[in-house]
Structures are given as structure tokens and as C-alpha cells.
Length: 564
Image (cartoon, rainbow, N blue to C red):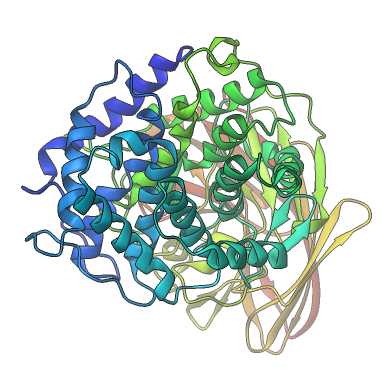
């Protein structure tokens, strides 16, 4: 992809398959039969709203554009906010999912008011603006959601309709409270530092910063500077082939991984050259377009690198994956912007091992793999598969990670990149770390407990294509432990396995993993199908230990094996 039209064509190719599924009045979009925790009506509003993350930038420069979606959305916005229409969206309530979806409509008022607002008559404008304004009257989680009302209110301000300035100020104040330094935020009061930092907090902040850059240049520059600092760490999350590290929740939003880079370009907050940005965005989009993430009718599915409900969140409805369209914010740039004419550039030279004190994690980026060594901290939020998504020892762009089908056996637990314990036929893993510390010599120390009666201190030392784990285990009873490496694609006869005393390896054409220890028994864990986010069949090399009562010390080396 080079010209602006190339990006527009890709965007339309992704969205065009939605057209048959809009409701008669165009205010709802229902593309599936699975459910989320919120009501179906909210899911249909979500389906309608999320394409606007791309369509609002697309119609920011409406000349010579395909107007088919403009007609659909103008009708849908009119009817959805008309109290006398049968497809009226109704009043929202506290913690309503629809609050999330209002933000994309706010962006439409910021970027493309001629298409999505001024094409309405006065009564329709009042209906739309009045309905959006109700976001100010309700409670919602104090996390990245605070930016939804910021985006909605600056959208209303942009079209000279009533807005609430105090809610904008409150939202920005909250972000300052969550700021960790060096460009990093937490997502509200949680200790999670995941994709919600780039594709939510920074993304929305940059929209706000761009909007206020003339009125409040100092505040705008501060937000942009934070984003620039963050970019110098976040670039490590992308490997040279374009894949980003699979880590944390909400991974079904897929190429929203690259939305931060689009926002940086659009807001002109550039710590790297435009060619570097273009390379990251293009390679990431190309990596996703090579994966089977669409169904046979061309609709985005719930899953990661293939359709997979097992790894989904309880807030993933059929239309949820279209949050990925945020990456097309770059379409708000004019066609003659430097971004569209510059050539793609490779990743700049990066450190082999980069500690990130603000986030208490370590990053590596080498060959064809980017890896995060996180801290496993969290607030115990009742979200899906938190241990699998946050508390493993390493997360990879090449190997992904696995989620559990059950804890009844090691194969169903599919506990890759983890030290797991078999206690009376039940598999226990790290749920939430008790403490985490970055050591001065580029190591991370984590204290954790998989269950009552077992305490573990783990020290991880990352290297360029490998890492070392040192475990000190205090057990009140004897049990079995498995120290496991990355999950490797099982490609029938093309995958080779090997086991011996203290050593195991799995090698496939997509790359492999070897684990070595001076003790224990090398084994291969035949993970249950569809547990890994990238490959639907995997095998996991591991070392099995018999853990006695008292204190034990074990260590292992995990080696990444390059693609053939």
C-alpha cells in the first residue's frame, strides 16, 4: 500500500461485506448469533457504530468518495436518534455498552460534520446532538471509558451544539492521575499496561490533542510528547514481519494494534520518520490480511489469527472486532500528505533487551520475534482468562499464547510459557503476581503463588533469542511441576519433536522452541486444539519436575528456533 487510495480500497474491501446486514432503517447492524454480556440491541448499535472509526476519517475529505456508506449512516443516525422512529436507540443507562459506541459518532462530528451532521435538517440535528449529550448524565467505569465522553463532547462543540466542558476537563484530569511516566499509563486503577494504553488512552488523547492544538498548545504538546515517549517502547511490540505481540485482553480487535501509529501520524507527533510509521502500519495490516480472520462472506470474526470464541471476552459481540477500523484514522490525512508518498522503512535499530521501568516489563525484539516479559500484576479483575493473558512469563509475536480449556490436565490447561503445578489432578498457574521488580541487570523478579501451600519466586533473564528462568519453590506438600516453553505450530509430518533427560524441543517450518534444564524430564505437551491464539494445533516443549516438601530450586533455558 502506497497511495491514500490504496488504504481507502482496503478499508472498503473490509467494510463492503457489511452492507446486506443493516436493518431496514439502517440504525442497527446484526452480523451474528453469538451473545455478549450486554443486551442484543446494544450489540446491534455496536455493529452499526464501529465502522465509523474508519468512515469518519474517510469522509473527512468527501470529494470523489464512494457515498454509499454516507447514505447508510446518515439514515441510520437520523433514525437511531429519533424518538418517534421504530429503530430509535432509546435512552442509555449507567455503564451502558452504548456509551462506548457513542465515541465513534463523536469522531464523525469532529472529522466529517458535513457528511454526518450538516446534511441533516435542524430537527434531526437536535435529535442527534441531544441523544449524544446524554453521555454526560451517566456513570461508567473509570478507565479508558472516560475518553468516550471527551470525544463526544468535543464533537458536539465542533458542530456548535450544547456540550459539557467540565466533563472534558474531568476526563483529561483522570488521564494525568493514571500517568506512570515515560509515556505510559495504566488503564484506570488497574495495574495492567496492555494494548489499552496505545489503542485507547493514547489514541483518544491524540484526537483531543489535535483538536486543541491551537487553543491550548501547551496541553496539546504535553499529550503529544507523552505519545512520542511511549512510541519508543511500543515499537518493540512489532516484529520485522509486521506481527505484534499477542498480549492482554481484547485481542479480537486485531489490527487496532496499529491504530496508535495512525494517530501519531495524523496528530503530527512523530518520534520516528514517516517511513518507519508506514512500514509498521503496512506490515501489520499485511500480516493480518494473510490470516483467516474473515468468514466466507467476508465478515470479521471473533478470534485472533483465526475464528476462536475460546479466547474471547464476555464483551465481544459479533460486531466487536470492527474496533480494528480505528487504524484507518490515517484516512483523515490529505491525499498529498508525506505519509502517502514516502517509501516504507524497516524497523530502526533496537536494543536487544530493553527494560521498561514505568510498566515493570522487559522487551526484546530480534530476528522474527518480538517478546514481552511482563510483571503479572493486576487487580484481580473478573475478566476472561486473566492469568493466561497477563501472568505468563513471556508473550510473543511469533508464537502467540494459549488459553485454557480446563484445569483437569496439562493438555487442557495448555500452560505454555508458564510454570504450572499439578496438585491432586488439578493444574494451577500464576493468577496474579504478588510483587514484581525490575532488577538493575535487566532481569525481572516475580513473587507469586499458584495455590495455598505453594510460594514461588521467579527471576527471568531475557537474552536476544532466549531467556532463563530461575525458580525458588516453597511447597507444603509434594506435587508435580511443568516448566513450559512457547507453543509451536503442529503441522502434521512437518513438525518434529524431541525429548530427553531435562530437555524437549518442537520444531516446525514456522519456527520452534527448545527448553533445557539440568534436572527433570523433558516432555511434549499435546495442547488441546484451538487453545493457541495463532495456531489451531500446537505442541509445547516442557520439563517435568517432582517437587518435594520444603524448598526447591530449579532453572531452565528457553530457546527460540528461527523459521526454516
